[in-house]
Amino acid sequence: MANKSQRSKLLPLLAIALCGGAVFAGTSLYVQSAPKVQPRRAAMPDVQVEAKQQPGTVQVMEPSYDKAGELNLEPRSVRVKEGSEAKAVAVAAYIAKIPAVPSNTRVLSVKLDGRTAVVDFSKELDSGYGTEDEKTLIQGVLATMGQFPDVDTVEFRIEGKPTQGIGNLDLSSPLAVIRVPKEKP
Image (cartoon, rainbow, N blue to C red; front, side, top):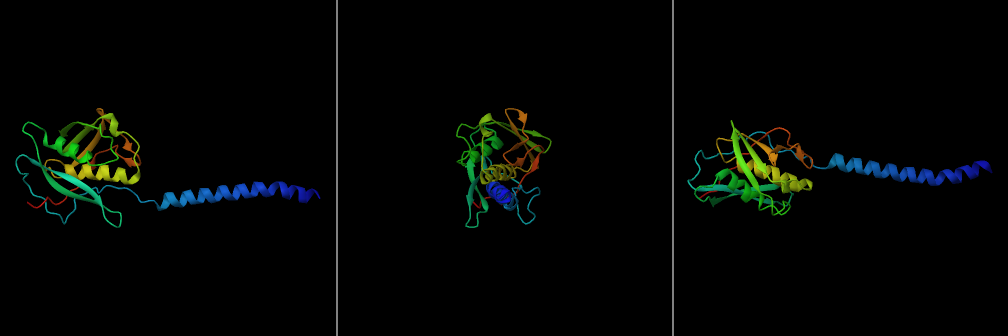
């Protein structure tokens, strides 16, 4: 009788342990199967990039996703007002197109340190993003800066301070720009 009593007490505990194990295993499988977000670290070799930017214009990337869920960035020419910093205008115009980025996010500055563009954002950029939003944000900024021949890498800052990352993306060191074809006139 004592064995039956002990088994009846252990049965609910065993059921809870099995459920907990199943949840843990499912979470582990989800994390392992989740797509890894890695911005490309090198220029795409099969892409031609014009050496000269048309005076008074920059390329602003238009983010979209295809049926397979892959991010596409289509360049569009935008005029830059005289006296404006073209790199900052291009990045600001790009992030304004991303619904997940708070509308009051600003590009504080874009400065060159050698061939690294140091892009400084306002604190509003440091908000919670999903994996696809992170990918769209970072790859788009890298592609936007890739149009400038004097920029090879991008360092991300928030309010003047280096950022370790946004969400799951490691931004502790500069990332290589992504070179995309320019819009056809």
